[in-house]
Amino acid sequence: MEVKMLNQNIIQVEDVHRSLSLGGREIHILRGVSFTVEAGEWVALTGPSGSGKSTLLGVLAGMDRPNRGKVRVCGVEINSLPEGELARFRNEKIGVVFQSFHLISMMTALENVEAPLYISSNKRQASMLAKQMFEQVGLSDRQHHLPHQLSGGEQQRVAIARALVNGPCLLFADEPTGNLDSATSKQVLGLIRLLRMHMGLTVMMVTHDPQVASYADRRLHLVDGQLVTPPSFVDMGLPKLQNAFSETGIANER
Image (cartoon, rainbow, N blue to C red; front, top):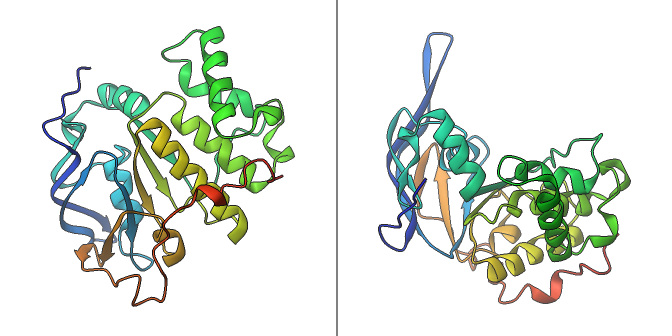
């Protein structure tokens, strides 16, 4: 699929609505959401529980479709793509990380990272690319371990490696530090910042944690499925973080 960027906006969302029918009632989850994200930005999607954050992220990542509105990613209107084309687009252009690591328990860390490559690469090439990704996330010595032999932070770094091994332009992260302690969270967020710089990534991250949100360049705040002006970091007593590079702690985390 040929992807053309219409401008520097890598994400364009226009009047997106998402609702579900439940017991004869229509539940409105997203209500006319519109915004753009520039290539290279790190945007935090914040808001109270039930505000529609994860639903919106799913729509942006092509895992769900809106009832109404348009979603353009890398210049492609993804909500109009047939399922087969959408799956290929996601595999090539989008990486997704969740709060739960979703690693396959019977596969080694290396095999988990290789899995997305099997569609487009042979086994040898997949192994080479996966090993390169392990070097970038600082886990070269853990690639033959099973998930249960890894710490929570290591499992999330494997999940990040898997999300990025195909060289996507976008990383969507849904509460990526939700299952981690504060020290490990800083390491994971610092790693995402480093990979963003090295790979030229655009990052869209769902979080309810103001400290995690402070790693982003800016925030989009959802309340009842609508974007509203977010409270400032100053209002929350949280100075904007200027540099996370010293917080990765990759070599020391086990």
